Image (cartoon, one colour):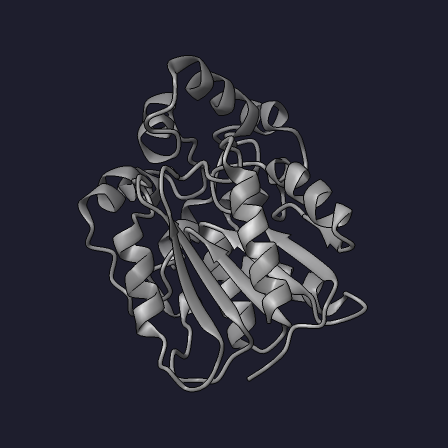
Amino acid sequence: MKTIHSKTIVFVTGAFVTHLGWKPWQDFFESKGYKTVAPSWPFKEESPAELRAKHPAGNPGLANLTLEELVNHYADIVKAQPEKPIVIGHSLGGLVTQIIVNRDLAAAGVAIHPVPPQGVIPYEFSFLKAGWKALGLFTDVHETYLMSLEDWQYAFVNEMSLADQQATYEANTIPESKRVTRDGLTSAAHVDFEKPHPPLLITAGDIDNIMPAHLSKRIFEAYKQNGSVLEYKEFAGRNHYVLGQPTWTEDAEYILDWLETH
């Protein structure tokens, strides 16, 4: 069983949203003595408004980004840290986190409401309803995909007030690569579930539509019990906007306690 000694955290952003949403989490963990970085995806460094202004054809680099390139982007950032870092990822960033943990590049990993690796087939209705448009079937793959407010309301911020749904949409949503989304169904999303790995925590929310708790639990159950630290935690009242809900500090406190316990 591995013990976590690292005091460095790399945050990995999910699809459809800006990396700037990690700022409160960075402040929280830095106040606890950690050094943190929350880099953007390639071609996503600008503000949400600037990125949306380039949609659909004004950001060909993003439109042509693949999952393999995205994983390698974050893997390079992880390897550049002065010590093996803790990697914390949300949604598709949770898939990237699992891959990086599987490569033994991290001291530990936390996958928050993660996209499943290859082999865990997401058949849950709410996942299919919330995410199928992002595949961009029968559309130009050289153009980006931008989630509509209506889709944002169902996929990310269900059960929040209309005012909050609209405000969070403006503050967070950005265009996305259809290639990255499609690659989640390929070997680019492969994880060896039997391989021993650094400590890994998978969290879920009971009202998340796009990554329902049932799916997160199936990801957890896909890993083999081989002596590696592996835990699953389901929180009540969390939708997919878990990083920005008023309850985010409770989630962060739980993750902090889990890291320091191990």
